[in-house]
Image 1 (tube, rainbow, N blue to C red):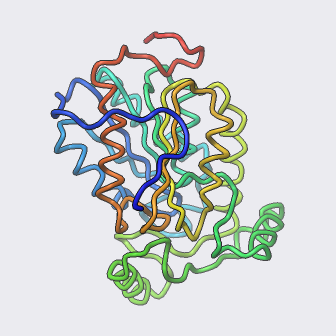
Image 2 (image 1 turned 30 degrees about the vertical axis):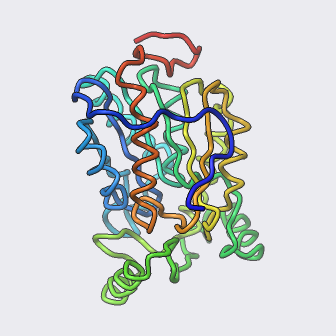
Amino acid sequence: MREQRLLGWPPPRPKAPVEEEGAGIVLVHGITGTPTEMRPLARHLQQLGYRVDRPLLAGHGEGYQEILASTWRDWLASVRSSVERMAAATSQVVVIGLSAGGLLGVLLAEEQPCVSGLALLSVHFGIPGPRISSTDRLLSRLLSCLPILRRHWSFVERPPYGLKDTRLQQRITAAIRDSKRGETAKYGLFRTYAETLHQVYQLEAAARRVMSRVRCPTLMIHSLADTMLSAHNATAVYRLLGSPKKSVILLTDCDHVMTVDLQKHLVAKQVSAFVRQFATTPRGYGNRNGTNGH
């Protein structure tokens, strides 16, 4: 079985391409990643006629000093700017976030009335997958409480990098080897500092506080084979979201970075089916009070 619908209402099937003035899509990459990991999904949505933006989060796309100098509020500001630009150009805005990028979408869905829909892919909500040992989890939490140490302690990610696609694993390994610092211009940073994890924990806490006030339709997709984050992250977020229209789809045959992994075409299909409804929905469904507005 390649997919399994777990909870909630079924999103509509994809129909004909829509015009640009219908829905605009903001694709948010994961923390330490780059917009490249959202490229296959962006191409699919653009082919259907949607306007798509892939903002680069503050502090990303460069080296470690830059990301260490950024906070979760800086990341949020990057996505907020993209959402506001998109709202000025389209009648509907849908935010689609990967991993912790999805939590930025949660915050903006509660904050910005123009956000009409939300999709969370491999959402990060603090429940580790099988590759994250309890010792590592405890250590990262402990270090996040020590401001001086957390800017110096780090770990370099090892294969499979949240991927089942062995060819992509090999390319990333080669790029990391060439850089000799755990960073690549194309694929992002594969060295994570405790300071960055601390910012993610702060982001989780901020998103948790507002989830009950998120009213827009929300789709969550998670893989049962995610080695980095358990699928229980999706079901936990499902329970907390205030949206009356929400669903969880579970996949197999892909890992955490599902937007570029073996099931990327299925992910794109499910996302486009979800997005399609916003071509005709009244703008402002995502208002924090649950009423239509601009």
